[in-house]
Length: 203
Image 1 (spheres, rainbow, N blue to C red):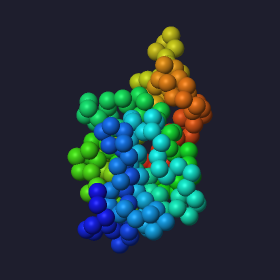
Image 2 (image 1 turned 30 degrees about the vertical axis):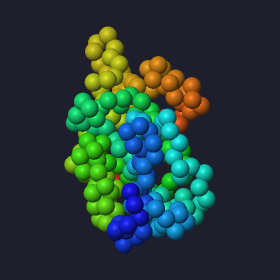
Image 3 (image 1 turned 90 degrees about the vertical axis):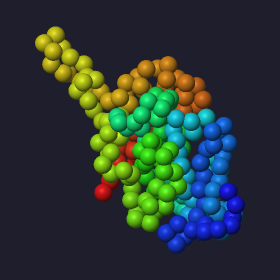
């Protein structure tokens, strides 16, 4: 994207970072040095981003504070295409949420792939944390406890509930795929709690 045209969102000079189809970093809107932009929107698709490094890593605190992270979340209503690699995606939430970002938001992945930057613009202008709000329960469905996934005793009574996230985490073939790259098991849980908190702020 060029630096020409309107490069502002909600009245602020804005640059957008996301990954392209081949894993390359794509920068849109303002091309000014990060020191000169007012807000940095970072679109995180956790299905692919665990395997790439963001240009925002290791930034000085004054630049880090400009970053708004938009996490593309799967939901129980997502299309089969948007659930591709969801196992890695659920664990991959921790990959770039380790940095102390103060503003983390969530977008249902299906909607972002259809509407793209128009959603970022609307969310920033209206100061929304989650889009679409009516899909919050479906997005939480991957993180929340579900009795259907629990353990039962001999009488069929549920003795322990699990989430879809926990089922993936405890399937070590998935977890070890990322642990082998230096991630720690505890980071998966921390990221899950972060996203549960984000999704609870939908309005």
